[in-house]
Amino acid sequence: ISEEVWRSRVDVNSRAEDPVAFAIDVTPDRKWAAIAVAGRRTDGGLHVELVKHDPGTGWVAGRMRELVDKWKPCAVVLDAAGPAGSLIAALEAAGVELEIPSAREIAQACGQFFDGVCGETPSMRHVDQPELVTALAGAQTRPLGDAWAWARKNVTVDISPLVAVTLAAWGFEVHGRDSVPLVAWR
Image: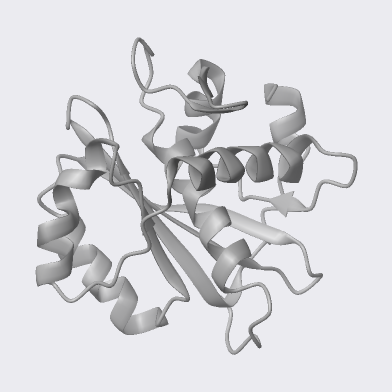
């Protein structure tokens, strides 16, 4: 996804309406973690946003519990086979119910994200956060069956924000698309 295309999807007034889906990702070296949100916009399109991107992982379960209490999301997504998988016990102990996608669903999430940004009828919008621009600039893909997923190994930038928004968008598409909006995110 080129920077030009990504920037063409900026809408600084974009907001996701309730229900929303959240997702969590962690860098392979565990130095950074990210939480992202996705949901429907008032125009029916999809909004993605980085909620928090901070050093370490110790803050994730507590912050996710706060977000779940406030927003009652339709899904909280985490790739159990990725670095964030080690947070499952802490998140479950905090009372966060997780949606764990299969490898096939991870590939679907990446394809849906790409189509939402670059497809024939792109519907995804975002608020132009630097962490996502950086992640996209350094992102690479890896084969996953006949599809692809974001590559975490041998990548020189932190792509946890990108993986998190990708998984949040998938979580919303699977669990929240047909729900009735209640309030706007933020």
